[in-house]
Length: 305
Image (tube, rainbow, N blue to C red):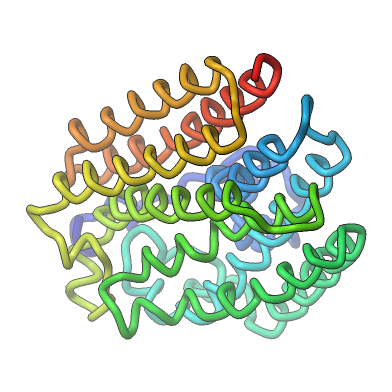
């Protein structure tokens, strides 16, 4: 969809949080994508998987709560940083031109102050974890602050997003066990391949605008080869997830969950319409249920393993 033909030139859809927020807060709600929680869930699921995989039975509810709060806060801070860095690009892309910084509805200095507040809240959550998890959390900032720059220098920013968004697999395992081990590494690897798949689908929404303004993405790099690429990366993701569960000796329900993940992967890889931005968004959002299926499989597999 091009800038000239986009319906977003006419109206911008808002969600309930933004509609109900006081006028002065509406730009901040939009800035952190509070009405678009899919990104928060995609950041959170690798954390939950690792905490559940490291548990002997039920995952620790305290850790789940801390990581849920941390994912929301860090994803919000990441959105702000991304919008600060990309505000000039966003103003030229149909899907993003109404974002508060791109449209001028919010000043950069106010966004920076809000981001600093969110990072302080994230630190307050992080220091409640094991020292190894604290170190990993601090180390993740290098990825968080590098990722938005990658679309300027490589056609594979999706790979850097995978490294960033799945860091929680290592962090969650370290918080639960105080160590790092192969199951966590395999979850992390599987998550990277998973992200390469779903974010390539997502990138197809903007490929026309990206090509015009010089932004790089895997969607542009792959073009007609996207479908076989998705089949490959989703297959590698399943293999890594399965190996992580097998190393932990999970019972048969885990493999039922993994089968549901495989079905969701196949639905995306085989049926996605890459020239239909609405379908790309719908297929992208299916990955919320990938997280649910794998988490449920891990928890149930622990019960009978």
